Length: 424
Image (cartoon, rainbow, N blue to C red; front, side, top):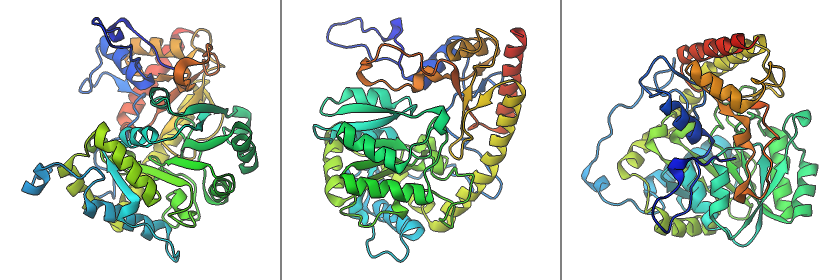
């Protein structure tokens, strides 16, 4: 769901309204109430980024970016070759030991952030049906609406199933709806559900059998709170790809979440060479290439040892924050349909709160009065092209982020307690 406000109505001819996506909308509303990032009276529990400061046992944070003479020039559209090689090498080391089919730099395309990677990719899609899940990432809505060559087809996940779908049921959805591609985040935003091990392997088998391309958004794949068969406790479809050139699997990731550098805006796509060439062609007219100096800095960050140390620090810190948030929410009467196994969000069910706080939009508006930001659940009812008229499905939900530092989380939950106390 997106919302339009007077500010989004162009005042000169030739432009359409471009509505604000969920997180952008709530941040805009909060700013009107006095929020800004340096204001310590506020708690932003709506943010879609992790804390970016020091974590215990994590590699030292980067404070300066050199801009050597070669990096002052345009970057190649597909990215610097050294960085592309580093990405390929990392995935081979982490996920493809002992496999004959390996990624090379030609299987990697660099872009200026995850949304831009997705934009390049969907701009290159053919006239197909592409599946996506509900609920899912709010920014997918406009992304799936802007390009008209494909038809987005929703697949509903229910709380009764824990927001999961079996490989057999997925196969029926793909064949019954004639899907040629499927877009999903793993772990999921907002529910935090994770496909891993035999489940992920079976999904890739379905992709091969049905000739349906899996577009795997893996930006939260290091935020895993249960053990996996991967020794580094990182989840990636790369572990179960049989042939990097023929398997219909595309992987998108970047520095934003898993290395905690959202401001760097460096992302990558892995897939068959032919597709990488195609999305690089799309990048030539969409954006012209990623930030050049930041690409050079990213190379060292993709060392295996650096990546594992950062991942271990993330999992230790964020697992503790997850437990703290869920415990406090339960004490307030806010429930969680399915325990998040990854990412850093709680998909919170407000149904047991007194009216009108059992409505996510009202819960958000009342929270602003106590200087706390959340994201109403209706925004995750992704509806490209606004073909559906109703947005009631997730009206009793909100997304609460435990991405910020613990002090901010504590302040935000205290504010939510005050909101609820007012209506008891």
